[in-house]
Image (cartoon, rainbow, N blue to C red; front, side, top):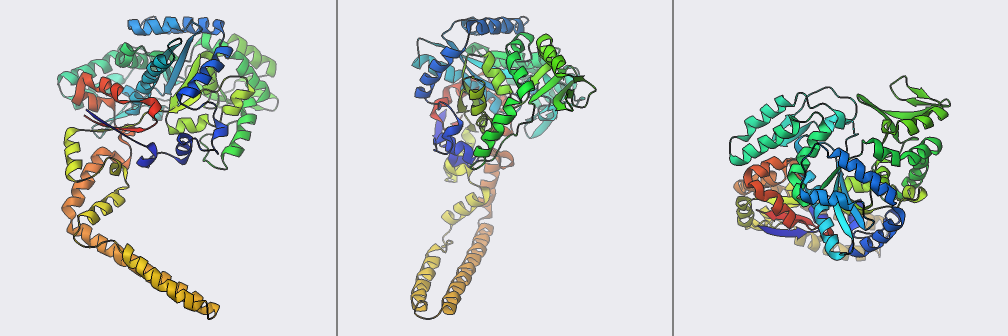
Length: 530
């Protein structure tokens, strides 16, 4: 196994927002609290110690134990759950949707980043305890985003009626998905493990939350991962004061809207707040709460409340109130002794909108850490890259640019006209000096002629490059095929492929090798040759 790390920015797949965050640029600093380095964690620990109550820990502990009642868990996970009642225990957290069979590869990278960070912090701060948490997005209702995964270029889908929070969805009907998936897998030892994992997860559990918990636990239990479902009566009781504040004062809308006015001067906005950033939840629906004509209404239903009625409902039925994307981060930080949230670029971009809101409601804003990203390269692909003289960084070039670069390098002709354009510009510079001694019309004529000549050379250069690509068609085809293997659909493979493809190839060594390779605080992109 060979590990190479390159800056995230050099892949071309990360936004200006993330580039500026990683570089701690001055313009983005107002939108986060402590940075994701050891000094930042020292400060965050001290801040969280002062704010998280023992009573909250005991409620959290009780809720987690009940969620795990019917699951077989490792001694390491049991130990981590018990540690939560201690005042010197902190969590590091990632969250993810309940994608079918874990969905895209980066699900694994998120969780392994979280596990490795907890271990690294334990080494750096031996007097404290750190436990990794996976927060299941059980209350999401975007079923179309999670009802499939890709395997070997094929889409494996679960077709069922949508509606309500996905964690409560019955797993009925997944037998058909299992049959389709099994036919793709074959009968190797690794294939048999994947079939058992899928069938034990989805065919022996009644709802999607339990199925996802089972699979994540099976994959990561030896590392002490704690899996939390926020759709929980006890946990939501801790959130009651913030739900009431939202209903009465629309605090998140007011504060986040002000932040967006500043943030959008430099960066695109990921999400926009609504006046009330809460849903009302039932088993088969999750609808927005709207304040209209002095009444609180549940969108697309006939349910209405007066102010007194809805505040009473919050007290008596907190499980019915579900935070949206703006308030979910706050819910997480209220109920967890959390130091850090680990997520992808899009997630971090919307968290950056929330710092002032957290300050307003007096909850510490967590450290934000860009999760590890990985490009996996097989030995065979590595040999091809070497033979084609393509470097690790060049893998991520736009395909047109990569082909042009390699064709030029492999040509006996001088394809680039840069020297010719430079010579031409020098000649026109002399003409411009002469033109200065005449009138404006002559200067304009010289400038126009220069543009025309340069444009003509650029056209010739493109035609020559096109002809040379045609002459080197075999090289072009080999590079194109290899880059398409590595970057399916010209995208990072972690967004396209499912872990089962690599488990089929590498078996039980796959996750340990990933764990060994990923360094969350290095803040770099990982290329892993296996």
